[in-house]
Every structure is written in C-alpha cells, then in structure tokens.
Length: 420
Image (cartoon, rainbow, N blue to C red; front, side, top):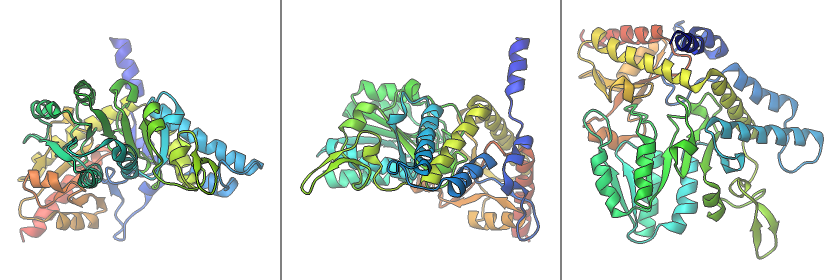
C-alpha cells in the first residue's frame, strides 16, 4: 500500500509548475489584474510545446502535404501523419487510419450525419439523443430527420443532472438506428456511463456516436474499451489550436461511408465523368487542411500523454470538489447545477439570484477573472432547468485552487455591487 501511495504521489500533477508552460498566464488585463482563466470548457490555453510545434511548421517547413516530393513537403507530410498517430494513441484507436482530421467536433458530427446518416436513416427511423447535448450534437440530427422524415427521441436529465437510464432503456425498445450522446456535459459537467450506455444501445441494434469534446482533454479515453462506433473531439479544448479536431470511427464504417466533401486529395483517380475515392482516412479530407493546427493537436496529445490522463482526472476532480465546497460557503445564495464531484468533470455552472450571468461575467472581468456566461450552446438543457442563462467556471491542468478562491471573492464583489 505504501508503494502504491508513493507512486500516486509521484504522478500527481503540479499545476503551479505546469503554469510556466502557458505563456498567456503571465499576462494581465487592462486593469493590471493577472489572468484567472476559468473558461477552459470553451477553449483551453496552449502550452509552449503546442505553440512551438505550430510555429516550427510555419517557420521551418511550411509546405503542402501528400503532394510534393521535395524535402520540405515530405517533412510536412511526415509531421502531419505523425500527428495522426499521436491522436490515435491518445484515445487508443486501433490504427491511425481510423482518425479523420476535421476542424472540430462539430464538423466531425456533421460528417457522420451527412455521410453515414443520409445513407442509413430513412422514413420512420429513430435517433436517440439526450437533453444535455451541445447544439453541435443536436442540430445536425434535427436537419437529418427533417430531411429523411425520421424521429428524434431524448433521454431526460434528472434534477441532480444525471441521465435517467430507466427511460433510456425504454427508448431503446424503439430500435433506434443511432444513439448519440455526450461523454461529459459542457454545462452540468456530468460524466455519463458511456460503456454501459454503449452496451445497451448495441444490444438494441443501434450504432453509437460519442461527443468527447469535454472528455478527451480531462480523463483517459479508450475507444476500444468504450466500444463506441464513432467518437469525436476538438483540438482547441485539449490544449491544441483552433481549427483542429478528429473523428474516430471503426474502419468498416469509414470504408462504407461516401465522402463528405469532394475535391483534391480525397480521390485516387479523376476522369471527366467519374472519380475513384482515396483510401481512408484521406477519402474524408478534401483540399488542403489546416496543417499547422493538426500538427499542434499532435503536440497537445503528446503533452497530455506525458502528464498522464489519470493524473489529469485526479487533479480536476479535486478542483471540482473544492469548488463545490467553497462557492456555496463563501457566496451565500449561489445556485449550483449538476451532480456531485465524483460524477462530474471540471465544470461548475451557477447563478446568483437576481443578477444576470452577463453582468456577473463583466464585473469579474475587471478582476481578470474569465468565465463563460450565457446558454453555453445548450439551450434545451437550460430550458429543462428553467434557466434563461447561467455562468460557468471550468478548469484544466493549469487551474489552481487559488483561482477558485479568487472566483469566490469576485462573486462576493458582484453581490456587493448589486446590493448597493
């Protein structure tokens, strides 16, 4: 037991040390206040390793990929494909060829909806979603069932922010073609029982798509262990650049799906009246991609793997538990949403009664504290809790308890301003 405790202690994150990897954390706002960044669920900060990887491509070997046979182009192609292999390793994909590079999780879901959905969803077919989905995992399916005359059904959310799995079991009796749900909610922080839900869906004959945008940066994700058919995530939420992301899908599904977009690089042969498609994943990567961004995402994958995703999860669980203890104690009247710390990621959404979240965020900004205010692209979930909007603090590897203390102090100042 002592050896195990020593091992865990040795692998614990030191967020204070890690903060030196993130140059932006040494900056101040226009009032001279140091940055307290609590909006990582929207977009994460970037470490030097990622910044330097992107800069290295632009400075040293900026050229197109998969085309040129000169040294510069071959170096770019090698770095791009190395990033694909790193991304596959991050989620334990069986092979890099099952990783399709996209701009973000939104594009990945649209790719599946367009390419798989339009071939496999027909009149009367059902897709099961949940009430806690981000708009990116809702609107594409709305468009699909409207076009195909299909149906959407939704797993409800309990008052404590958990999916009602008894209702999910009933909905599976409808024999849906697809079940799509988030691995972790970006508003409630809820971490869903993915493996169990996948097993239930497969037993009902459905394929499963998981939105992992809020999971991949924060916990170990093994797509083989989870058993899902499609898994999507964004680079900019996992310490990588904007404009980067990935779709993972089982090889047999990708091979059966038609292309999402047409153009250069996604073809093997082109004739005037017909074309033959390239092999996967290139069949889904038309045109010149954001090469630098995907190389940066590969660097972010390496950074997270070096930290250890178990250590990342432990760190954020402790931060969340601390926030759920400190905020109601230090900010009387605050309303918190979502489950207990053991069931949620590093996300805490809240409201101060009688004060609009936009006002909360604006006043906090004077102290350098950055939070999200609004509906967080989850309007139906806000309707479920009868909320027009909410404020949200979200954490990452560089977040420290002192920033949660600063948030509590800032929120007391918000209350003081409005009580004048």
